[in-house]
Image (cartoon, rainbow, N blue to C red; front, side, top):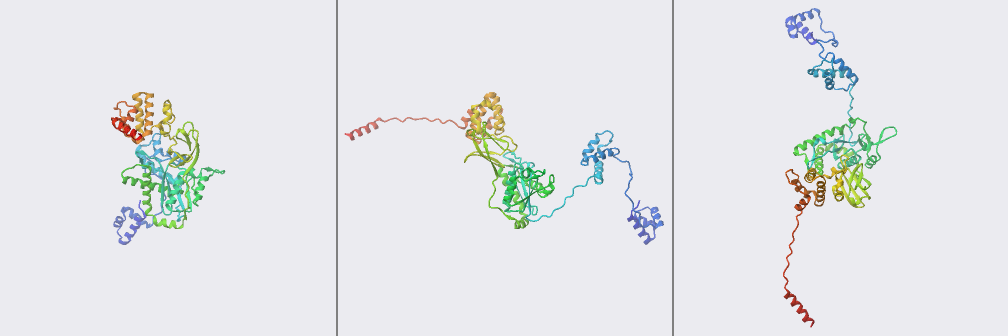
Length: 493
C-alpha cells in the first residue's frame, strides 16, 4: 500500500526522466507496483475510510468485553484498578504484562465513549477588584516547635491580578481564623479591594436559608461590612472557581519547603519564631510583584480607622471540677474560683480567662478538642485527695511531657501503685513551686532504669539544700555594764 506522496513523486520523476525503474526507486516502491500506476494513469489516490478490521488477534480477547461493561456502568473507574480486578476474574484470561495495552485501550474508550471533561474558562482579572481567601493544611512541611510536631493550617489571601499574597498560621477553618487572616492581609497591604471571595466554609456560610442555600453568617457579614468588602462565594465542590488562591496554596508550601531546606532545620524555638519565618518568606515572594501591586493599590479603598478584635468573649461558670467549658472544650482554672463566673477571651491560638480585671489564666487553645488541664490549678486539691488521681478523667493531661511520664512509671514501679502515685503528685507540687525549668534537668537524670529508687523529698533537698545556721554566742563583759551602771548612779546623785 502506497500513499499520495509516493504516487506524486513517481508521476513527477517518470515525466521528467521516463525511466520507470529509477522513478520507482526514488518514490520508494516496487517497480511492478509503479508500472501498474503508470499504465492506469492514476495521479490521485482514492480517500480511504478508517480501518474496521484487525490485522492480528485481539490480545485482550474476552477480557475487554467484561471491562467495557464495567466502564459503561462506572466511567470513573481507573484502568489499573479495573485491570487488577479482571486478573482475579475467571474467564478474563489476562496476563500481568498486558497492563500497558489495557491502559491504552481504556484511554481510547474514554476518548470515544466517555463523558466530556469539564471546560475551564480562563478569566480576565482587573486590578483591585477581588481578594481570594482559602485555607491549606501545612502538615507536610513537618515543622516542629522545640521538638514537638506543629500541626497547623495557613489562612491564605491572594490578589488574583498581581498575585500578591499573605498567610497566617491558624488551627482550623473558623470565623476567628478568617478574621485574623483577613485583617492581617488587609493591614499588611494597606488598602481594601472591592470584593472578598471565599469558599462555602462554615466560617462564612454556616447559616442555611429556607431555600436550602447557604447564607452568610451574621458575624462574617459584620466583618466584611466593617472593611467595605462585598462577599461572594464559589459553587459547592467547585474549587476551580477559587483557582488563583488554590494554585498559590501549592506554590506557597513549595516555597516554604525550599526555604526550610536552605535553613537546614525545620525545628523552631517557639511558634513566634516560625511565624516570623513565614512572614519573611512571604515578603520576599511579594518583592517581584510591586509594579502590579501598585496598580491595584491605586484603585483600592482606604482602610477603616479601627481594627476589629480577633477574639470572642464568653461568660463561663466554673464547675466543681475546677474547669470551664469553652467552645465544647474543657479548660482548667484555679480551684478558688469554683462556682464563680469568669470572662473568657477566645482567640485562634489561646484562651485568656479573667475574673473582673484580674488575669486568672492563659491557656493554649486546644487543637483536637481534648481537655487542656494545667496541673498547677488542681495539684493542691489532688494532694488532699490522692486516690482521685488513678481514675481522673483528664489524668493524661497531668503529664507535662515524656520525662514526667517516665518519672511516674518509675515511682510506681519502685514504690507500688498508691505510694508511687502520691510521690508523683508531690513531684508535680514541687514543679509548681520551683518551675519546670528548675526540675527538668535533675528529673532527666532520675528516670533511667539503672537509677536506684528515690522519692520527691530527695529531689527537693537536691534542688533546695537546707541552710545550716550556726549561732556563735559572744562573751559578755560585765565590767562594761558595771561602768555604765556606776556612771548612771553618779549622775543621779
